[in-house]
Length: 332
View 1 (cartoon, helix red, strand yellow):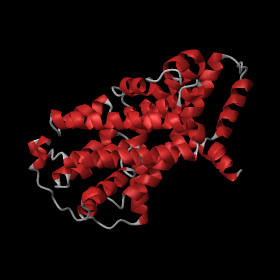
View 2 (cartoon, rainbow, N blue to C red; view 1 turned 30 degrees about the horizontal axis):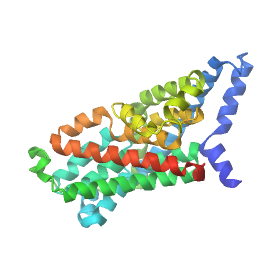
View 3 (cartoon, one colour; view 1 turned 90 degrees about the vertical axis):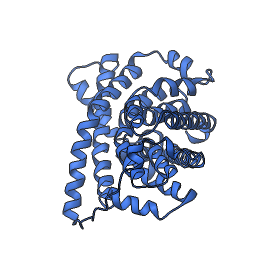
View 4 (tube, rainbow, N blue to C red; view 1 turned 135 degrees about the vertical axis):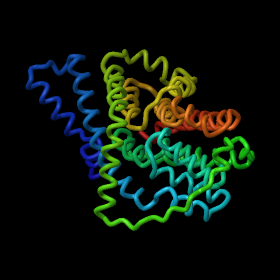
């Protein structure tokens, strides 16, 4: 009962949905109409996601203040082989929320001479399985789905980085990055107030960047939730279509959003009968393989390495989608 309360009322903020519904009824709006339902969905999900976003970024940015890029490079440099890839993937869970923000760090780590496999393990995990995805998935799908999602995402990151390392593709990184000189910058000691100030600045900066994508995602979710016939979603993304995971991965890759923008769409698709694996594959592909981030990554790596990275991520995401479809009865 305690966990249900935490999931529904604290993380899920169901009280907010009830309050908005009561407010709309007080204003004379028909609670059963599609328009009212769309407005309620839009207001509830926007406020819920932005509140969770603020709290999460504040906490994670405070943790990040202890791990500036140079210190992270030194930590990663102590490990080798599979262990280094695991540490790189874990480091990605407490770094930026979207792939476009992760790429500059990836370039910095690569320029500093870290093994290519380690930097790619970081690059895969950072947008796909950050702590934000864990908390937000817990708020709508429960802790079982959230934990399995993060674990499988880390497996993709570690396996992908290991494979890239075994292929010895260092020459596929652009020369200006491979030949860059790392500068050892001393890190000043920060007090608690300094770290909180830094974390709050990150909250404001990130909120400004992601708000447009949250609004777009919530708007799409509201349309799906209230206007798209359930049978359409079931036909395209339900259990009767064995290619639903592949379709979701392909159509979502060109998009650009972070985990916060995909949550309302995922929530609406699930409500309409889409399979869990299809929805999670959609989320992973949007956050990891977005077109803008691939354009940025192309500036740092050559086409061969970029193609291998995309292929590894796509295959991993599709496999994870089918795994979730199979185990869905035991998770929900």
